[in-house]
Length: 386
Ligand code: FAD
Image 1 (cartoon, protein in one colour):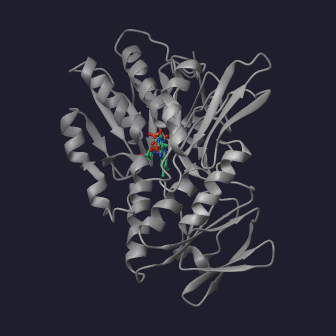
Image 2 (cartoon, rainbow, N blue to C red; image 1 turned 90 degrees about the vertical axis):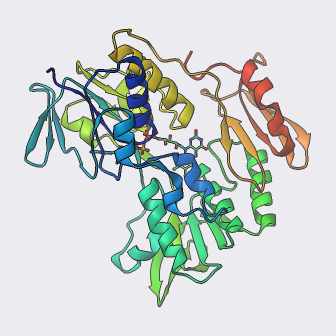
Image 3 (cartoon, helix red, strand yellow; image 1 turned 180 degrees about the vertical axis):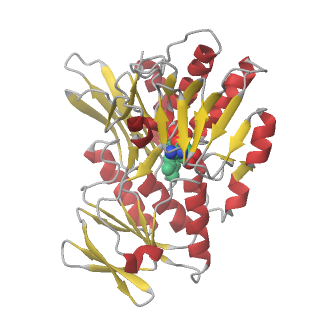
């Protein structure tokens, strides 16, 4: 029997690819190796779970045993791949050497805190980037009395979504970030301010334009010293300062990597024959979108390629829906700097259209009732990867 297709990673990219390959080829030998528990879950639901009091076991749609059974593949969980030798087509897992026929890296992206967390506060400082993290944070919250004080550092999509969700779950939330308004990478300042005000009005203690100078233990709590001299007490601190593509494994194979991820072409191929990459770890033709629709399109295209029909991936004009019920937000950030943002609407209901010098639509951002315009505007906007 030939060496199997090996997929590294059991996130939405790795499992999505396994599903697509199996749909096209009932007999192909597939092995999926993952450093985590291998449960099938939807990562976007992690930041909607606290409002519903959703225990982690209810977020897992299928156990790894059920997943392996459904896709007729071998699954190795809690197993970290340490290295790749493309010359001998083998993976190293500790002292073990495992041959592969074709290899797909779906290693995702990891939180990248901007400061070192001292040992004295480590048990109170968390990130939530997978179901295992959610389980730990859920357990830590359950040990606090109702209404724990949670300080969130970072006002990007993940920080804002958890702030709204934890507030709705009955906790006292503060949000600290250096930017003047939330979602600075997705929204022009006027719309960011609308979201920031809505979050403040909902009851979130917004500490914008501030950075965390230090985190110190203060009995049972953590004291966040801010750069303006204020101190914020918290029972738990959630760091949401962005994700960096996991490229260390690709590095061991000498693949081209950058801060944006493992470099691939439209076929999700790296420069090494028989090694592909997709999902948050991959920078596809210069773009690492880091959200679900692009990785689903990649899984579909790559499955076709791996089963004998070489297929380049294309991404449509797919806006991001931010899950902040205190103020709904939809955004399709422009890929180039716009000549202007044309802002329409009033109050919380704003549309911002990013245009080039000829008035062509490059992207958009919507708040409040204007999120209704997402379909109409997405039709008029250029695709992310034509
Ligand atoms: P991951 O889910 O990170 O999976 C990586 C896998 O690789 C893991 O199984 C890990 O264990 C494994 N791995 C890594 N290194 C190794 C190794 N050396 N050996 C073995 N295994 C390894 N996107 C949207 O489109 N809409 C949303 O509403 C949305 N909400 C989100 C909310 C939150 C809170 C977060 C964090 C993200 C959200 N996203 C959303 C983004 C989206 O969820 C991600 O783009 C997507 O889940 C990434 O999937 P992935 O499989 O590439 O990576």
